[in-house]
Image (cartoon, rainbow, N blue to C red; front, side, top):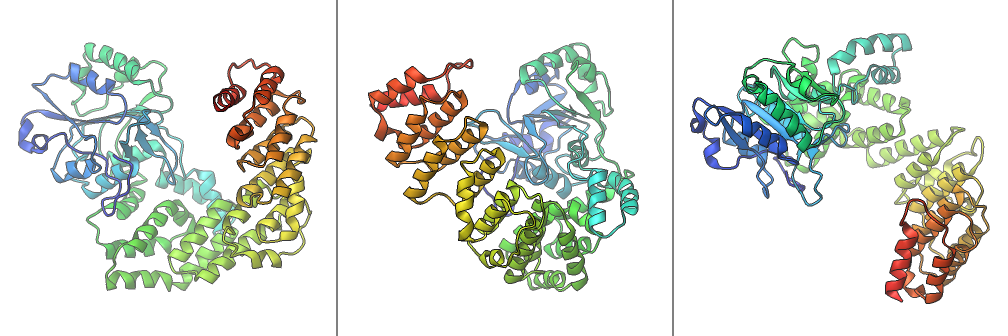
Length: 559
């Protein structure tokens, strides 16, 4: 798959090498081995060496240079008996990650699990994956059993926040957890429904050449007879010693999570009409908020797609039904207010606006309430400062900052939140914290300055002078890094940094200074005297070349 956007097809991933492979009649009597090679081809070549051409037809589904791999294969009615996927795998979570990718920076192909799900859901009974006898997933964590979103304790917390008692929440969570299985292993089981043998790795996988060596040994020992046998065998696992190779089966209709799988497909099945999908989403939103939380990522993607696609009057009416459902809105906002996770709460607020439950001014009020709740906590952190600055980037929440009461325990973090929310009288206190002895205070000030940078030469010079007077600690390194973020060009500030270099006894401080000068207008100060100072006074490094050497090389080239 190429990394650029698509409209209705989404992120398509698989395709055929040529039209003849798409013909069902092209390999009569043969098993079709579909390969998806987004990284190493070693595993594919091992299969090709040992599976006889008289019995197996190989089809590479990746077409370099075109985006619609999967859609092309699906529309040409390719049917895979065996599937071999080779690529690094990022298990991630539903908000990000979950894809096979290449280690080569110039490669543009990758394979998102979301797109695999779309294909599996769209043609469940007679599609690309519906006739598989075995799947081989050569990537780390492809069959990792750790839940991504539906661990029992996380479900329990969502149930408490949706109004259940702690005892009921823990009991319900134990019942719900198997129904909402969402680990990497479970996602693969859902995609490859009814497949008797799915081979993959529960943790680290070997690199391609090593995996190919193990496969060669397996095939020479008679493994080729098992490949298309249509049943699971643990024999292959013994040929990958200590490599976490494991075996799973595809999901079955009797499994506890079949309802979850069906719900996921409602979001993805292209045969579902937009009106049916809108009605399904409304029914989902009527469920317990703990279930809505599990589907939040998919609800966000659905709302984003609906917002940019043309709609029929019937779909508009179905979406209006969601917006006007006072009961759902009330429960949703109550859950939002009870949520302790800051990132989750902001996401819930954003989605509430998309579903029509919050007008723009009501959304601002909800964000202000969120920040006020955080501000009222005695132990606020740099993360809270980041939320205040990020959410008020356009100064739309300045009024909320003016309305905040006194902090329960005034400190730099509360000052920084107020400064982010438009309180100019708090800025000086935050700037002073940048040169304090407290590593935490310096970190908070640096977060603030990412969003509200130093834009005055006097401020820059004052900060640089204060940094030079700091004790040699990690706080001083952080303060220099904060100054480096501004890509300084002021001669006095650069001179202060240069004069600090020979007097400090900390290698980390010297490296931080070098990093700041590299990012600054170092060419204006590229003099033999400075280069000599750096060479004479640099502290020895056990790690070899570092930023100081890079700076010296660049100054030499510029002088």
